[in-house]
Structures are given as structure tokens and as C-alpha cells.
Image 1: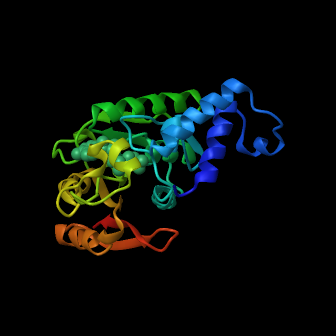
Image 2 (image 1 turned 30 degrees about the vertical axis):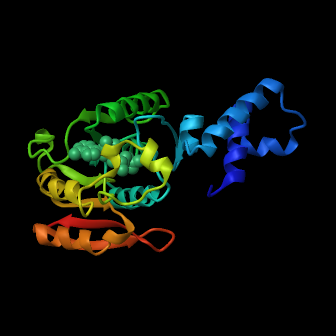
Length: 266
Ligand SMILES: C[S@@+](CC[C@H](N)C(=O)[O-])C[C@H]1O[C@@H](n2cnc3c(N)ncnc32)[C@H](O)[C@@H]1O
């Protein structure tokens, strides 16, 4: 396991319904909690993702509900959101589309951190969109600007026709793992296949989406797409070859690995 101590502490804190820091001053664990803790440890050892066991995933300032059927949001995607928020600075009621929204991590963070943004989350997988909707509804309860959730395919040429030429930022963390790539058991057995696999080079869905994004964006609007470590040259090349986009740039994550490509509609 990558971080067994942290995972164990978070599971114990979850069972006891206390913050992790509270464990430092804990004198005793009731027997029923200890039994439940052991069950969860066994599942974690069997590579069930920590977030499926606690039912929550932290992402930027939010805690999202997650579980079987939805992709667990990853910390590296927080940087893509940061980039989107920078593009929105000073805009009143900007229009944003999140393609392949899953738990809603990107869409809901943008609505939370740029109040008044008009955000639409698009998701194709019927299993995943139940989580998108659930999390979107909880954020309205928490006082955030509502996010529209639309069941649709990000490669569909007719997607969101009503937003043609009106979108300030299109953002996506699409499925981008090349078919047949080796991934950890947590990922292979628990993230939904539609969230992962992107064809022989991992870029099939992106290829289908570039035209849709170009149609949705207003002139000067921005596109940001997350990608795999090994796609830091191929994805920018694909965007350049598509035509219509300018300022094509790739960005590293905090570990210095190529992580997302951005471009502007010319
Ligand atoms: C890597 S996950 C990202 C989820 C979320 N945006 C995040 O960053 O945590 C990709 C998501 O895209 C969805 N998806 C895959 N192909 C799609 C398509 N053609 N149209 C719309 N959504 C799609 C998957 O179901 C999955 O929820």
C-alpha cells in the first residue's frame, strides 16, 4: 500500500466519526467500532479504494460523495480547476462546460469558487450521472450556485446546441488511459471502465471532443484537457492539428509530470 498508516488512521476516524487529529487523544476504541475497523482494513488490503470505504472524496474545498460506479476524483485535477478559475477572473456569470463530470468534482468546484458561474456538467455513463446529480443537489443545499447536469456524449456533434459560441471555458478530464495499460487494482477493479479507457493511444475520446468544444466556445474562449503522463506532446499536437485553436500549451502537475493541455479558440 502506498500510505498504509494514513489510510488506517482515516478509516479509524471514519468508524468513530471523529476528525483524524482526534485520534491522538483517543484512549479507547469501543468493541463494535474495532470490529468495523477490522472489516474496513480487510477491504482496503483487498484494494478497495479508501474513498469507497468512507464514501467521501476530498477535492479542493469540497467533500464529494463517491462509491461504486463513479470515478474517484484525483488531487492532480485540482490544478486544472485552478487554471479554469484564473481564466474566469473578473468575468460576471461566465459560461463553463465540464465534459465527463463523474462525481462533479470540476463543475461543482468551479461553481463553489466562482459564485454566479453558469456551469453545465455533461456525463454519459448512467451509473456515474447518478453521483453527479446527487452531489450537484447537495451543493445547492450548501448554498452554492446550481450546476446543470446533462446526460450526453462529449463527442456528439449536436451536444448542448443551445450554448453554441457562448461558452467561456470548456474543461474536461476525459478517459485517457491507453487500452491495455497496466493500472493498480484499485483503479482496474473499482473505477468505471468508461472513465478510464481511451482507445489504443488513450486519445480517442479527446479526438471526438475537440470539434464539439470548438463549436461551443466563443471566440477567445478557453479549452483545458487533462491527460496521461505520456501524452504531453501528443495531445498538444492533436489540438494544433485540429485547427481553429491558438496558444496551445501543456502544463505540468506538482510532481513535474505533463498533466493538462490548454488552448484558446482563435
Ligand atoms: C476520468 S473520469 C473524470 C471524472 C471527473 N471529471 C473528475 O475529474 O474526477 C472521466 C468521466 O468521463 C465520462 N465519460 C467517458 N466518455 C464520455 C463521453 N463520451 N461523453 C461524456 N462523458 C464521458 C466517464 O463516465 C467519467 O465519468
